[in-house]
Length: 116
Image (cartoon, rainbow, N blue to C red):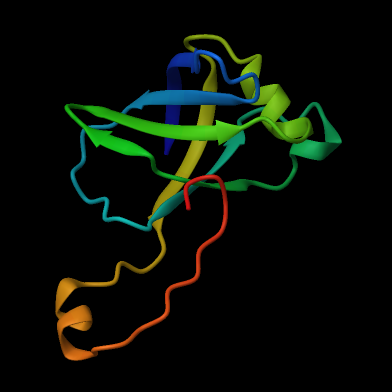
């Protein structure tokens, strides 16, 4: 789906973390899911591949991602402006339901990224 950047916020006292916001009216996101994000224009060879980002918050018509600025693509995202067009694919990933936790007494969960 094509979306427009609604807002990009820098987090106070944290130099390398931003919150990227989009309008999103669907209510089909579950904990642990993510979206693939990439620009609609491919003027830069580093942006040919889409990148996965976990959802940090959603609801009230908004979809938010907390993104650590750590490479060329995330630096490019930092410089996006309100109204810039991006493409999202998602939500992707499998949600672990509560009944799974009730069935097994001991489980190990492994996570990665800035949200773990």
